[in-house]
Image (tube, rainbow, N blue to C red; front, top):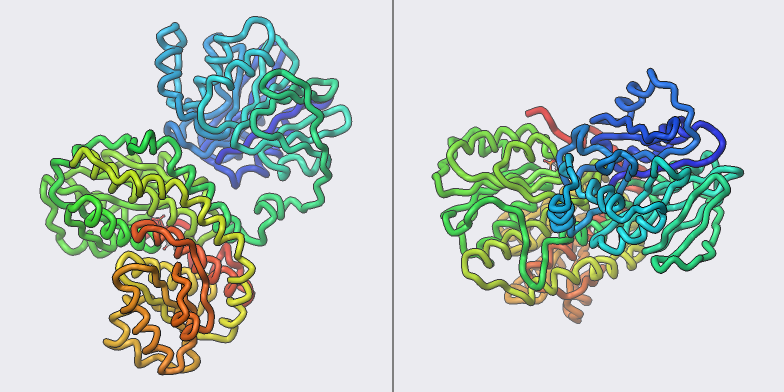
Length: 597
Ligand code: F6R
């Protein structure tokens, strides 16, 4: 995600930059840095780790500059260390850049710039922007930035300074940026939380717009250099509301972010109907895959088993990391161990990874530079941005998306062919999820009926059995209502005894060969008086008759169905918990990252 703040005015910039960064820290906290213009030279101060590290470093410095840009980083390209921290310089240290987003063609640009003699020192995609601006710079920073963004593919929110011009140039495509209009001062920031203490008058930059901030104010232009009149708006939100994007809790915000986070997981990895992953292993040499993880990540692993066995035809075993490490697992030299972890720090998952001393390992991880991401031989980053709500939501859908990409990649590497229809459909998933989110009110209304419930059963089959497990985990984590996930057909082997009129049963059922069988399971629950919520893509009269509530989801291929089916279950858990008065972002007894065994 990353956070950007910039200031130009009559007062010293540094205090504004630091207080703004603190407000933006929820967007990333791998490293932080500032750039100010002191005595005609750009000075960059940056530190690895949270903003307090940068603040400690700045405590010994006297900085009077009235212009500056700053950044707090959520690492995507390159580890979270000081070299990769923003701002980044060009070769001559005359241009400094902070960036939020992902530059997809940065490798090609890097090769070009290096062939022209530029010295690129970090692993980031951002540094190439500074060098491109240097390449185009004659005597006008605005022109050089405009030429540069014409060469960039991907997403960016940029703030740029130059040692010889008292200006900040700002540009955006895909990543948010707003201008804050104060008296004799102008701000730029990734979101309003960073500037709301100083001004409520803001302009939301649109894609391909460029803003020129100077001591006299600001001007706004399009990519062709034509002047625009920006629409100034007044912000009435509190700081707390802004950090959560107007949502009551981070969990809800993160549920609603999923169209974007899935698109970010896919970004740059699907090219002309082919899958591009930087995975350093030959799948032709792999004879068995073992996937290990904990909690929600373990549910993704179960979906991964289904996907890889169906799409690639390789056998897959899935194990809880905490069990795997203590059961003397048999790992052959041609096996591949995949570990899945949002945080990349879960102690059991890390210990399970250490069991794999003689085979290839691959991590599916969200946090760049985390311990697991460093210890695996190759990996896939989720690029889902910081997940702050303790209950995992957007990481789950990005994990499943990564596993679909991995299965398709292996298929292509092994057979030379790939299911292009599935790839096309995968790219349409963000939009389909959006359509479910647009109906959140309906799910909120249904959730009222859970008030006072103590028990629930979540049932699904095939690839949607792990979805039932994940739906049940979400409900119990945040609402403290007992919820059990089960394969629908197993219900009659025991759990059916629990069903009475106080028991809520949530079915997840899609079109396909087992549709009729699940209908029979729904009949069995109805006959015993259970209260039924059905998540389905089938506009089916029998389902409507048997269920108390039906939540419709868009119809997609079976392989992709977990991505749409989980959304109503996440919303249901959230709304039930909120109605029960639980602090959804910090449910009792739980920690975001379980770094103890
Ligand atoms: C559930 C949840 C946990 C985590 C589990 C693994 O909402 O968040 O079950 O999924 O602790 O954490 P990571 O993925 O960080 O290894």
